[in-house]
Image 1 (cartoon, rainbow, N blue to C red):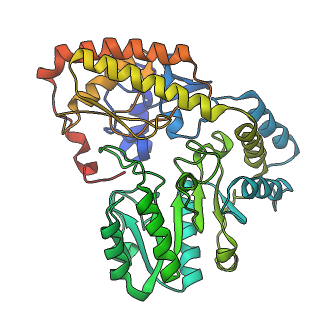
Image 2: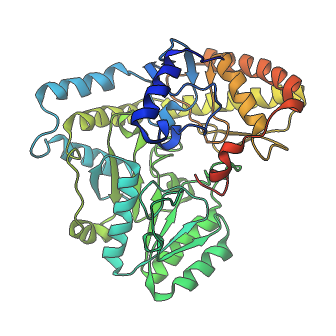
Image 3: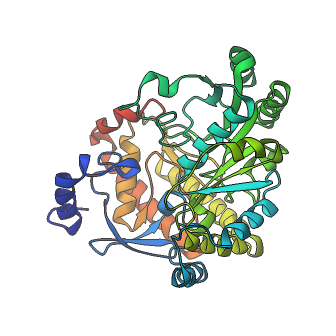
Length: 425
Protein backbone atom coordinates (compact mmCIF):
# COMPACT_ATOMS: atom_id res chain seq x y z
CA UNK A 1 0.00 0.00 0.00
CA UNK A 2 1.68 3.17 -1.18
CA UNK A 3 1.57 6.12 1.20
CA UNK A 4 3.40 8.60 -1.03
CA UNK A 5 1.71 12.01 -0.79
CA UNK A 6 -0.79 10.58 1.68
CA UNK A 7 -2.15 12.40 4.72
CA UNK A 8 -0.20 9.91 6.84
CA UNK A 9 3.06 10.73 5.02
CA UNK A 10 2.45 14.46 5.42
CA UNK A 11 1.91 14.02 9.17
CA UNK A 12 5.09 11.94 9.43
CA UNK A 13 7.08 14.69 7.76
CA UNK A 14 5.62 17.31 10.08
CA UNK A 15 6.22 15.07 13.09
CA UNK A 16 9.90 14.66 12.25
CA UNK A 17 10.34 18.39 12.84
CA UNK A 18 8.65 18.52 16.25
CA UNK A 19 8.80 14.97 17.73
CA UNK A 20 12.16 13.22 18.33
CA UNK A 21 12.42 10.37 15.86
CA UNK A 22 9.06 11.33 14.39
CA UNK A 23 7.25 8.91 16.71
CA UNK A 24 7.94 7.27 20.07
CA UNK A 25 7.12 4.15 22.03
CA UNK A 26 5.58 1.02 20.56
CA UNK A 27 4.64 2.81 17.32
CA UNK A 28 8.18 4.12 16.72
CA UNK A 29 9.23 4.40 13.11
CA UNK A 30 10.76 1.13 11.91
CA UNK A 31 9.03 -1.20 14.35
CA UNK A 32 6.31 -2.02 11.81
CA UNK A 33 6.37 -2.45 8.03
CA UNK A 34 6.93 0.80 6.14
CA UNK A 35 3.46 0.71 4.61
CA UNK A 36 1.76 0.62 8.01
CA UNK A 37 -0.05 3.82 8.98
CA UNK A 38 1.33 5.85 11.87
CA UNK A 39 -1.75 8.04 12.37
CA UNK A 40 -5.40 7.14 12.87
CA UNK A 41 -8.63 9.07 12.73
CA UNK A 42 -11.37 6.84 14.07
CA UNK A 43 -12.23 3.64 15.90
CA UNK A 44 -15.55 1.80 15.94
CA UNK A 45 -16.18 -1.61 17.44
CA UNK A 46 -13.42 -3.92 16.25
CA UNK A 47 -12.21 -1.57 13.49
CA UNK A 48 -9.86 1.39 13.14
CA UNK A 49 -9.64 3.92 10.33
CA UNK A 50 -6.40 5.68 9.45
CA UNK A 51 -6.12 9.35 8.50
CA UNK A 52 -6.36 8.42 4.82
CA UNK A 53 -9.72 6.72 5.31
CA UNK A 54 -8.52 3.11 5.17
CA UNK A 55 -10.50 0.89 7.55
CA UNK A 56 -9.05 -2.23 9.18
CA UNK A 57 -10.17 -5.06 11.41
CA UNK A 58 -7.86 -4.36 14.33
CA UNK A 59 -6.15 -7.31 15.99
CA UNK A 60 -4.03 -4.97 18.12
CA UNK A 61 -7.00 -3.46 19.96
CA UNK A 62 -4.86 -0.38 20.76
CA UNK A 63 -2.23 -2.77 22.19
CA UNK A 64 -4.83 -4.19 24.54
CA UNK A 65 -7.16 -1.50 25.95
CA UNK A 66 -10.02 -2.26 23.55
CA UNK A 67 -11.90 -5.13 25.23
CA UNK A 68 -15.55 -4.39 24.39
CA UNK A 69 -15.11 -2.36 21.21
CA UNK A 70 -14.01 1.13 20.30
CA UNK A 71 -16.70 3.65 21.18
CA UNK A 72 -18.74 1.23 23.27
CA UNK A 73 -21.99 3.14 23.87
CA UNK A 74 -22.58 2.21 27.51
CA UNK A 75 -18.98 2.68 28.62
CA UNK A 76 -18.56 5.96 26.77
CA UNK A 77 -21.93 7.23 28.03
CA UNK A 78 -20.78 6.67 31.62
CA UNK A 79 -17.58 8.55 30.83
CA UNK A 80 -19.40 11.50 29.24
CA UNK A 81 -21.98 11.72 32.05
CA UNK A 82 -19.20 12.06 34.59
CA UNK A 83 -17.43 14.68 32.46
CA UNK A 84 -20.54 16.79 32.81
CA UNK A 85 -20.29 16.60 36.60
CA UNK A 86 -16.52 16.87 37.01
CA UNK A 87 -13.41 14.97 36.05
CA UNK A 88 -10.06 16.34 37.26
CA UNK A 89 -10.96 17.95 40.57
CA UNK A 90 -9.01 18.93 43.66
CA UNK A 91 -9.71 15.47 45.04
CA UNK A 92 -11.44 12.28 43.92
CA UNK A 93 -15.16 11.65 43.70
CA UNK A 94 -17.01 8.81 45.39
CA UNK A 95 -16.38 6.78 42.23
CA UNK A 96 -12.87 6.01 43.45
CA UNK A 97 -14.23 4.15 46.46
CA UNK A 98 -16.86 2.41 44.35
CA UNK A 99 -14.28 1.26 41.79
CA UNK A 100 -11.94 0.01 44.51
CA UNK A 101 -14.83 -1.91 46.04
CA UNK A 102 -15.75 -3.42 42.67
CA UNK A 103 -12.21 -4.55 41.90
CA UNK A 104 -11.52 -6.03 45.31
CA UNK A 105 -14.81 -7.92 45.08
CA UNK A 106 -13.76 -9.43 41.73
CA UNK A 107 -10.06 -10.18 42.28
CA UNK A 108 -9.59 -12.89 44.89
CA UNK A 109 -6.28 -11.81 46.38
CA UNK A 110 -7.13 -8.09 46.50
CA UNK A 111 -8.10 -6.22 49.66
CA UNK A 112 -7.20 -2.70 48.49
CA UNK A 113 -6.54 -0.63 45.37
CA UNK A 114 -4.43 2.40 44.41
CA UNK A 115 -5.30 4.02 41.08
CA UNK A 116 -2.88 5.52 38.60
CA UNK A 117 -2.70 6.03 34.83
CA UNK A 118 -0.31 3.63 33.08
CA UNK A 119 0.86 0.08 33.51
CA UNK A 120 4.33 1.39 34.30
CA UNK A 121 2.84 3.40 37.18
CA UNK A 122 1.28 0.25 38.61
CA UNK A 123 4.34 -2.00 38.28
CA UNK A 124 6.62 0.68 39.73
CA UNK A 125 4.27 1.13 42.68
CA UNK A 126 4.40 -2.63 43.20
CA UNK A 127 8.20 -2.45 43.31
CA UNK A 128 8.10 0.39 45.85
CA UNK A 129 5.48 -1.29 48.00
CA UNK A 130 7.44 -4.56 48.07
CA UNK A 131 10.61 -2.78 49.12
CA UNK A 132 8.74 -0.79 51.75
CA UNK A 133 7.13 -3.94 53.10
CA UNK A 134 10.30 -6.02 53.28
CA UNK A 135 12.88 -3.25 53.76
CA UNK A 136 14.95 -5.16 51.20
CA UNK A 137 16.31 -4.25 47.79
CA UNK A 138 16.57 -7.20 45.42
CA UNK A 139 13.92 -8.11 42.87
CA UNK A 140 13.70 -11.20 40.66
CA UNK A 141 12.12 -11.07 37.23
CA UNK A 142 12.23 -13.23 34.13
CA UNK A 143 14.66 -12.55 31.30
CA UNK A 144 12.95 -10.76 28.42
CA UNK A 145 9.78 -9.97 30.38
CA UNK A 146 8.25 -6.54 29.89
CA UNK A 147 7.09 -4.64 32.98
CA UNK A 148 6.93 -1.08 31.67
CA UNK A 149 9.02 1.89 30.57
CA UNK A 150 10.39 3.27 33.85
CA UNK A 151 14.21 3.37 34.17
CA UNK A 152 14.26 0.21 36.33
CA UNK A 153 12.57 -1.91 33.63
CA UNK A 154 12.63 -0.08 30.28
CA UNK A 155 13.73 -2.42 27.44
CA UNK A 156 15.94 0.19 25.73
CA UNK A 157 18.51 1.38 28.27
CA UNK A 158 19.44 4.66 26.53
CA UNK A 159 19.32 7.43 29.11
CA UNK A 160 19.46 5.09 32.10
CA UNK A 161 22.42 4.38 34.37
CA UNK A 162 23.62 1.20 36.02
CA UNK A 163 22.12 2.09 39.38
CA UNK A 164 18.65 2.38 37.80
CA UNK A 165 18.82 -1.36 37.21
CA UNK A 166 20.70 -2.33 40.33
CA UNK A 167 19.47 -5.05 42.67
CA UNK A 168 17.74 -7.05 39.95
CA UNK A 169 18.30 -10.75 39.41
CA UNK A 170 17.02 -12.50 36.30
CA UNK A 171 15.72 -16.03 35.92
CA UNK A 172 14.28 -18.07 33.06
CA UNK A 173 10.49 -18.09 32.93
CA UNK A 174 9.01 -21.50 33.76
CA UNK A 175 12.39 -22.83 34.93
CA UNK A 176 12.03 -23.79 38.59
CA UNK A 177 15.75 -24.44 39.06
CA UNK A 178 16.61 -21.03 37.58
CA UNK A 179 14.09 -19.36 39.89
CA UNK A 180 15.47 -21.17 42.92
CA UNK A 181 19.01 -20.15 41.98
CA UNK A 182 17.93 -16.52 41.71
CA UNK A 183 16.33 -16.66 45.15
CA UNK A 184 19.50 -18.20 46.57
CA UNK A 185 21.54 -15.41 44.99
CA UNK A 186 19.29 -12.78 46.56
CA UNK A 187 19.85 -14.29 49.99
CA UNK A 188 18.17 -12.40 52.79
CA UNK A 189 17.70 -9.27 50.65
CA UNK A 190 14.83 -10.44 48.43
CA UNK A 191 11.93 -7.98 48.22
CA UNK A 192 9.82 -9.44 45.43
CA UNK A 193 9.43 -11.90 42.61
CA UNK A 194 7.77 -10.34 39.55
CA UNK A 195 5.87 -12.64 37.21
CA UNK A 196 4.12 -12.22 33.89
CA UNK A 197 0.74 -14.00 33.64
CA UNK A 198 2.23 -16.04 30.80
CA UNK A 199 5.42 -15.71 28.80
CA UNK A 200 4.52 -12.93 26.37
CA UNK A 201 7.96 -11.69 25.33
CA UNK A 202 8.24 -10.23 21.84
CA UNK A 203 9.94 -12.01 18.92
CA UNK A 204 9.68 -15.49 20.48
CA UNK A 205 6.93 -18.03 20.99
CA UNK A 206 4.63 -17.37 23.91
CA UNK A 207 4.19 -19.98 26.63
CA UNK A 208 1.63 -20.75 29.29
CA UNK A 209 2.88 -20.63 32.87
CA UNK A 210 3.94 -23.99 34.26
CA UNK A 211 1.83 -24.57 37.39
CA UNK A 212 4.91 -25.97 39.14
CA UNK A 213 6.79 -22.74 38.42
CA UNK A 214 3.95 -20.54 39.65
CA UNK A 215 3.44 -22.58 42.81
CA UNK A 216 7.16 -22.61 43.54
CA UNK A 217 7.29 -18.82 43.17
CA UNK A 218 4.53 -18.58 45.77
CA UNK A 219 6.33 -21.00 48.10
CA UNK A 220 9.63 -19.15 47.81
CA UNK A 221 7.99 -15.84 48.63
CA UNK A 222 6.31 -17.38 51.66
CA UNK A 223 9.60 -18.89 52.82
CA UNK A 224 11.63 -15.72 52.40
CA UNK A 225 9.03 -13.10 53.32
CA UNK A 226 9.23 -11.55 49.85
CA UNK A 227 6.12 -10.45 47.96
CA UNK A 228 4.83 -12.17 44.83
CA UNK A 229 3.79 -9.68 42.11
CA UNK A 230 1.78 -10.70 39.04
CA UNK A 231 1.95 -8.09 36.28
CA UNK A 232 -1.54 -8.39 34.76
CA UNK A 233 -1.42 -5.09 32.87
CA UNK A 234 -1.51 -6.84 29.51
CA UNK A 235 -3.57 -9.96 30.23
CA UNK A 236 -5.95 -8.82 32.96
CA UNK A 237 -9.56 -9.98 32.33
CA UNK A 238 -8.57 -11.53 29.00
CA UNK A 239 -7.91 -14.98 30.45
CA UNK A 240 -10.17 -15.14 33.50
CA UNK A 241 -12.39 -12.83 35.53
CA UNK A 242 -9.77 -12.68 38.27
CA UNK A 243 -6.00 -12.34 38.49
CA UNK A 244 -4.53 -14.47 35.72
CA UNK A 245 -2.58 -16.78 38.04
CA UNK A 246 -5.80 -17.68 39.85
CA UNK A 247 -6.22 -20.20 37.00
CA UNK A 248 -3.25 -22.02 38.53
CA UNK A 249 -4.48 -21.85 42.08
CA UNK A 250 -1.81 -19.26 42.92
CA UNK A 251 -2.64 -15.92 44.52
CA UNK A 252 -0.08 -13.07 44.46
CA UNK A 253 0.40 -10.43 47.13
CA UNK A 254 0.29 -7.61 44.56
CA UNK A 255 -0.99 -7.36 41.01
CA UNK A 256 -0.72 -4.54 38.49
CA UNK A 257 -3.54 -3.80 36.04
CA UNK A 258 -4.23 -1.42 33.18
CA UNK A 259 -5.10 -1.43 29.48
CA UNK A 260 -8.65 -2.83 29.29
CA UNK A 261 -10.03 -2.17 32.78
CA UNK A 262 -11.87 0.92 31.49
CA UNK A 263 -12.00 -0.14 27.81
CA UNK A 264 -9.35 2.36 26.76
CA UNK A 265 -10.08 5.26 29.07
CA UNK A 266 -6.89 6.21 30.94
CA UNK A 267 -6.65 4.40 34.25
CA UNK A 268 -4.57 1.64 35.82
CA UNK A 269 -4.41 0.17 39.29
CA UNK A 270 -2.25 -1.66 41.80
CA UNK A 271 -4.20 -4.26 43.77
CA UNK A 272 -2.86 -5.81 46.94
CA UNK A 273 -3.55 -8.06 49.89
CA UNK A 274 -3.77 -6.94 53.48
CA UNK A 275 -0.24 -8.21 54.00
CA UNK A 276 1.08 -5.24 52.01
CA UNK A 277 -1.52 -2.66 53.08
CA UNK A 278 0.70 -0.84 55.60
CA UNK A 279 3.58 -0.60 53.13
CA UNK A 280 1.28 0.66 50.38
CA UNK A 281 0.03 3.38 52.70
CA UNK A 282 3.61 4.39 53.51
CA UNK A 283 4.91 5.00 49.99
CA UNK A 284 4.27 8.39 48.34
CA UNK A 285 2.71 8.03 44.90
CA UNK A 286 0.58 10.54 43.05
CA UNK A 287 -0.13 12.23 39.73
CA UNK A 288 -2.06 15.29 38.66
CA UNK A 289 -4.62 13.15 36.83
CA UNK A 290 -4.73 10.04 39.02
CA UNK A 291 -8.03 11.09 40.66
CA UNK A 292 -9.83 11.67 37.34
CA UNK A 293 -13.45 10.66 37.78
CA UNK A 294 -14.58 10.06 34.19
CA UNK A 295 -12.21 7.11 33.59
CA UNK A 296 -13.40 5.65 36.90
CA UNK A 297 -16.99 5.85 35.69
CA UNK A 298 -15.93 4.08 32.51
CA UNK A 299 -14.12 1.49 34.62
CA UNK A 300 -17.20 0.74 36.69
CA UNK A 301 -19.27 0.17 33.55
CA UNK A 302 -16.51 -2.00 32.04
CA UNK A 303 -16.39 -4.13 35.18
CA UNK A 304 -20.17 -4.53 35.05
CA UNK A 305 -19.89 -5.87 31.51
CA UNK A 306 -17.05 -8.17 32.56
CA UNK A 307 -19.23 -9.59 35.34
CA UNK A 308 -22.54 -9.78 33.51
CA UNK A 309 -21.77 -10.70 29.89
CA UNK A 310 -20.24 -13.72 28.19
CA UNK A 311 -17.52 -11.59 26.56
CA UNK A 312 -14.72 -13.91 27.69
CA UNK A 313 -16.36 -17.05 26.41
CA UNK A 314 -17.11 -15.38 23.08
CA UNK A 315 -13.60 -14.06 22.45
CA UNK A 316 -12.19 -17.44 23.51
CA UNK A 317 -14.39 -19.17 20.92
CA UNK A 318 -13.42 -16.63 18.27
CA UNK A 319 -9.76 -17.14 19.08
CA UNK A 320 -10.13 -20.88 18.58
CA UNK A 321 -11.87 -20.29 15.24
CA UNK A 322 -9.07 -17.98 14.11
CA UNK A 323 -6.32 -20.35 15.21
CA UNK A 324 -7.81 -23.39 13.51
CA UNK A 325 -8.45 -21.49 10.30
CA UNK A 326 -4.96 -20.03 10.14
CA UNK A 327 -3.37 -23.43 10.78
CA UNK A 328 -5.33 -24.89 7.87
CA UNK A 329 -4.52 -22.07 5.48
CA UNK A 330 -0.83 -21.80 6.36
CA UNK A 331 -0.42 -25.55 5.95
CA UNK A 332 -2.13 -25.48 2.56
CA UNK A 333 0.29 -22.76 1.45
CA UNK A 334 3.27 -24.77 2.71
CA UNK A 335 4.34 -22.45 5.53
CA UNK A 336 5.47 -23.34 9.00
CA UNK A 337 3.33 -20.86 10.91
CA UNK A 338 3.42 -20.86 14.69
CA UNK A 339 0.52 -19.52 16.76
CA UNK A 340 1.33 -19.35 20.45
CA UNK A 341 -0.16 -17.93 23.59
CA UNK A 342 -3.83 -17.81 24.55
CA UNK A 343 -6.30 -17.69 21.68
CA UNK A 344 -7.51 -14.33 23.01
CA UNK A 345 -3.95 -12.92 22.79
CA UNK A 346 -2.24 -14.68 19.87
CA UNK A 347 1.26 -14.26 18.48
CA UNK A 348 2.10 -15.23 14.89
CA UNK A 349 5.64 -16.23 13.84
CA UNK A 350 6.95 -18.06 10.79
CA UNK A 351 9.43 -20.93 10.84
CA UNK A 352 12.83 -20.15 9.31
CA UNK A 353 12.30 -16.41 9.68
CA UNK A 354 15.06 -15.18 12.00
CA UNK A 355 14.94 -11.58 10.82
CA UNK A 356 11.13 -11.44 10.41
CA UNK A 357 11.13 -10.76 6.69
CA UNK A 358 8.30 -13.28 6.18
CA UNK A 359 6.40 -11.85 9.12
CA UNK A 360 6.70 -8.29 7.86
CA UNK A 361 5.61 -9.28 4.36
CA UNK A 362 2.63 -11.25 5.66
CA UNK A 363 1.58 -8.34 7.88
CA UNK A 364 1.75 -5.94 4.92
CA UNK A 365 -0.32 -8.27 2.78
CA UNK A 366 -2.93 -8.55 5.53
CA UNK A 367 -3.02 -4.75 5.87
CA UNK A 368 -3.59 -4.44 2.12
CA UNK A 369 -6.64 -6.65 2.62
CA UNK A 370 -8.03 -4.64 5.51
CA UNK A 371 -6.70 -6.61 8.50
CA UNK A 372 -4.27 -5.05 10.98
CA UNK A 373 -1.96 -7.66 12.53
CA UNK A 374 1.48 -7.37 14.11
CA UNK A 375 4.61 -9.20 12.88
CA UNK A 376 6.29 -9.72 16.27
CA UNK A 377 4.07 -8.61 19.17
CA UNK A 378 1.17 -10.49 20.70
CA UNK A 379 -2.25 -9.40 19.48
CA UNK A 380 -5.70 -9.18 21.09
CA UNK A 381 -9.27 -10.09 20.33
CA UNK A 382 -12.16 -7.92 21.50
CA UNK A 383 -15.80 -8.62 22.24
CA UNK A 384 -16.94 -6.47 19.31
CA UNK A 385 -15.49 -9.02 16.87
CA UNK A 386 -17.86 -11.43 15.15
CA UNK A 387 -17.61 -14.77 13.38
CA UNK A 388 -17.91 -12.84 10.12
CA UNK A 389 -14.91 -10.72 11.11
CA UNK A 390 -12.85 -13.83 11.82
CA UNK A 391 -13.92 -15.47 8.57
CA UNK A 392 -13.00 -12.30 6.69
CA UNK A 393 -9.59 -12.31 8.36
CA UNK A 394 -9.11 -15.95 7.32
CA UNK A 395 -9.95 -15.10 3.71
CA UNK A 396 -7.40 -12.28 3.90
CA UNK A 397 -4.84 -14.68 5.37
CA UNK A 398 -5.38 -17.21 2.60
CA UNK A 399 -4.68 -14.56 -0.01
CA UNK A 400 -1.75 -13.19 2.01
CA UNK A 401 -0.11 -16.60 2.33
CA UNK A 402 -0.47 -16.96 -1.42
CA UNK A 403 1.13 -13.58 -2.06
CA UNK A 404 3.93 -14.35 0.37
CA UNK A 405 4.66 -17.61 -1.42
CA UNK A 406 5.44 -15.73 -4.63
CA UNK A 407 7.68 -13.18 -2.87
CA UNK A 408 9.57 -15.16 -0.27
CA UNK A 409 12.78 -15.65 -2.25
CA UNK A 410 13.15 -11.91 -2.88
CA UNK A 411 12.34 -10.54 0.56
CA UNK A 412 14.80 -8.08 2.07
CA UNK A 413 15.94 -8.53 5.70
CA UNK A 414 14.36 -6.40 8.38
CA UNK A 415 17.42 -4.66 9.76
CA UNK A 416 15.58 -1.94 11.70
CA UNK A 417 14.66 -4.34 14.49
CA UNK A 418 18.24 -5.20 15.47
CA UNK A 419 18.15 -2.98 18.55
CA UNK A 420 15.09 -4.83 19.86
CA UNK A 421 16.05 -8.40 19.02
CA UNK A 422 17.54 -9.18 22.44
CA UNK A 423 14.23 -9.42 24.28
CA UNK A 424 13.24 -5.79 24.20
CA UNK A 425 9.58 -6.45 24.86
